[in-house]
Every structure is written in C-alpha cells, then in structure tokens.
Length: 404
Image: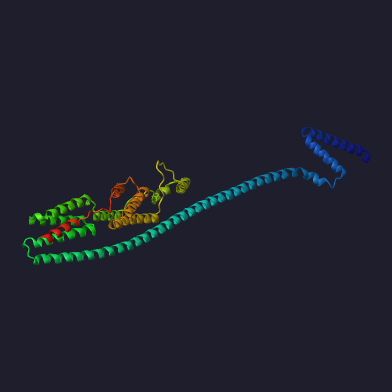
C-alpha cells in the first residue's frame, strides 16, 4: 500500500520543475523582445493587483494605437481635399467675376459708341434739315427774282412790239423798197440782242443777233449807217471778251456731278467681315477652336494698323447715306447759285463738296480724283460776268433812221 506522503515531495518537485520551466521560458522571451517583456511584466503586475478587472483592457490596448493613427491620416487627406475644393471654388468664382466684368465693360463701351453714333446721326439729320430749310428759302428768293425778271421781260416785250410797229410805219413811209424793211429788221435784232444779254444772260443769241444786224446794214451799202456798224462791231468784241462763261453748261455739269456721288468709295466705311469656313472648324481641336474664338473676340475690340495720315472717322451705313445726300445738296446748291448768278453761294457749295470728298472718300480712287479735279476747275469760274452795254448801236440806228 502506498503511503500518500511519499507522493507529496514528488508533486512539489514537479511544481518546482514547472516553475523553473516557466522562468526559463520567460527569460528567453525577455531576451528576444524587451518591449514585449515589459508589456507582459506590466500586464502581470496589473494582473496580480487586479486579476479580474484589468484583464480585458490589458489584452485590447495594443490594437487601439494603429486605429487612431489611421484616423488621423484620413482626416489630413480629407482636409487637404476640402482645401483644394475651396481653392477651386474661389478660383471659379473669381474667373466668373472677371468674365462678367469684362463683358460689362465691352457692353458699356459698345453702348457708349452706339450713343455717340446716334448723336452724330442726329447732328447730321439736324444739319440736313437746316440745309433743306436754307434751300427752301433760297428757292423762294429765286421765285421772287424770276417774277421780277418776268416783269422786265414783259416791259421788253412791249418795247419789241413798239419796234414792230415802227417797222410797219417804216414800210408805209416813202423809203426805198430795199431799205425800210431791212432797217426795221436791224432794229428788231438789236433789241433782241439787248434782251438776251441783259435778262437771259445768253451771250450766244446776243452775238448771233448783233452779227445778223451788221450783215443787214452791210447789205444796204449805205454810208449813213457807218457809225451804227462801228458801234455794233465794238459791242460784238465786248461781248466776245466775256462770252466764254457758259452758265447753262456749268449748271448742267454740276447736276451731272451730283448724280455721280452715290457710287464713290468712302474712306473708313464699315464693311462686314468675311465668314470663316465652317468645315475647317470641325477638324480643329477644342483648344484651337477656343483660341480662334478668343482671337475673333479680341479682333473686334482692338485693331492695329499703320498709317502716316490722320485717321479718318469710321462711318456706319446710315451715316454714309446722309453724307452722300449732303454732298448732293452742296452741288445742287451750287447749281442754283449759277442760275441765280450768285457767286458767293456758288463758291460755298463747291468748296463744301470738295472738302467732304477729301475728308471722307478714298482720294486715291480714279473716280474720286476725277471728281475733285472737276470741282477744282469749277471753283475758278465766275458766274456773275459783267456784260457790256449794247444800247449805243440801237440809239445810232434810230438817229440815222430819223435823220434819213
């Protein structure tokens, strides 16, 4: 039978051996990982002090440290991303504000330019209305002058009728048959020459009448009419000295020039830009199309060109219309001044048309150059010639006829 006390030392020995084994294993593990042994020693000390309450936190503590570090990294990335989004939003708002500001400036500039153009057009309209009113007033004056000339013509017609009666009385008197009608016809021709020159400003008809009268007296072969013929020839020479002014032809030429104004090219007129090829735009990339669009927009805002002459004002189509009409009015005013023998208004109309052509039209164009040359030549004309008096020959004829 076994004694139970014999086994007790054996159990103590095994316990001692287990303790030694555990101590050796602890030494090996502490040698391999000092950090782990410190954690385990602290854990053991904690376990000894409070084995039940601190067992779970001691086992979970090493897993908490990586989770907190990962949370902080995610927060930094998220904050950096939010900062980028905020910068992008601020940049987008700033770019949008800049675009709106630029567009507002362009709209304001276009609006002010349109207002200036409208003011110029209104000024042109007012000027045109003033010129039309002045022309109407001038027409009224011309009507009054025409009425006065009509009364003078009626008085001259009465003189011609008196001359015709004298012709009939000459025919009834006892003169040689070949002399009486001829003298009466000469008197009629001299009256006709005086009328055409003084009232109608028609030197050609006056010269023809004087030459015909001289030929009639020469055919009579009467020495008593020598003084009359001498006076007639002196009057012919005096009229020929100033007869080179063809007022009727001058008025017709001005009317022709006024009709040719419409087709002359303007300097600085606004013309539409050529449209870009739509097929070419489809082959370009979006970036190239953006650059092309940007160049087109900036080209409308800024235009750079080299010129050695003062810049001519740009004219819109409606302004060009009024400009053409103003020059036509200038030339027609000069034409009326020719017919009215008004040298001052004639010079003013020709000079105004010439100045407008030089300022607004392409002077290098052949048609414009020809128009300017014609106006330069017309500006030297005298539309108020001083016609000589041709009444001396008629007085001598009547004296000779009464004496004969």
